[in-house]
Length: 151
Image 1 (cartoon, helix red, strand yellow):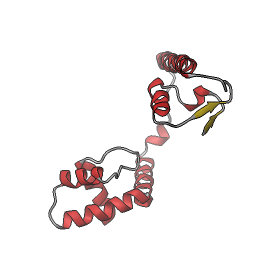
Image 2 (cartoon, helix red, strand yellow):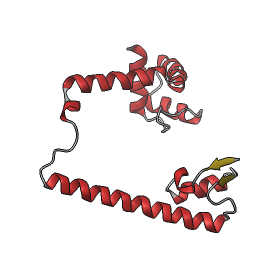
Image 3 (cartoon, one colour):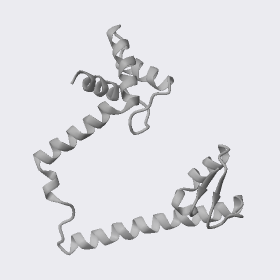
Image 4 (spheres, one colour):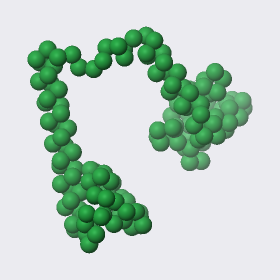
């Protein structure tokens, strides 16, 4: 049983709510404990609409600030040193990720017997491996994974 303080804190995406519900996960919203499928659908629709309104208001406000001459972002974050540090942190995270280490072992053994990048990616996907961000492997991710393993 998943207990949620407020339905809109779980997600503001109708499809996600119904996918969760259809998957057999039962959940209760503390703000609406007697909610049924209809109520959840209406509330999820309202939450998704609010998300879209917030996004649009934010986009308009940033455009107005930019138009008024304000500099958006932090230029100090765009230095070569900051960019390099960001790359190093991402690579360290990728190296330490348990799923990546397991996928790397399989990918290395397949590459040693001359399997193509695409074949390796397909095999990883078929065996349930996902990238650190939960996506399917593509040939380029396999190449990066092997590069990390050698670096």
